[in-house]
Image (tube, rainbow, N blue to C red; front, top):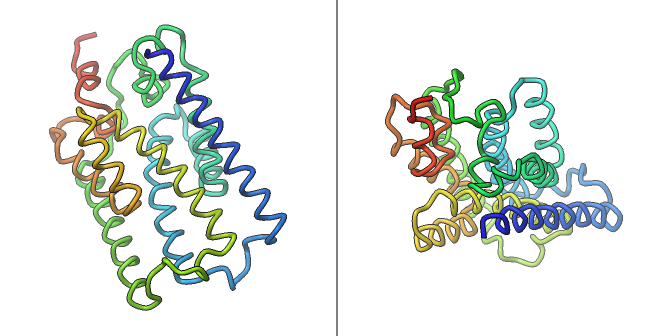
Amino acid sequence: MIVSLAIGLRSLFTVLGCVITATLIYTIATDGLPFRRELLTPWMAATLVDFYINVLAIGAWIVYKESNWISATLWLVLLVCLGSITTCGYIVLQFLKLSPPESLQDPIYFVLLRHQNKDGVEQKKKFSFLAARVLFSALGCLMLGTLSYTLITDGSPFRREVLTPWMEATLVDFYINVVALSVWVAYKESSWISAVFWIVLLICFGSITTCVYIVRQLFHLPSQDPVYLVLFNCNNRKHFSEPT
């Protein structure tokens, strides 16, 4: 069952990576490059803010995950430039790096875990709880303000003229990152009811939900714990408190 989970997730993100690559190629071929002023409509701008807040959340995991700043910076640049193509490629690569025992035990835990920390030893690198809470609270407020402003000034997004070819491609890109975040939420939550609840909110409200969920998880952690423990569910956090 656990092995099939690892294979299933690896296959899922391989397929999603192919989908967004094909979508990007098709949109460039049929609608040209996206670097045109007329494409930056109010709702496209709001979608890009939404998109990059989720990219920041995924990027924070990559920074933690990578063992040096050079590789972390490289992956972040690719994430900013290529979006969910990079997300899918990075996740598939992490699954391919799992050893057979790791795939058998808890593949999502080991995929989330930092390269130099697979024995559960606590990292020395720490990030302020207050800074993390303030950052994601501010980003959540930014997205809520952007959404409210765009609704007031440009009306509802559920109009045919809003759905341009590049908006469609951006939404595909956006929701593939939402899939990645949803897998993490499902891993984190102790029941399927709460997992489905948060995933539905992610689909409906995007990065507002991402920020609320992360801040909520940060408040559930003891302040003396390292911030990166927010990545792991309650069962896996015990690995970090066990004597080595």
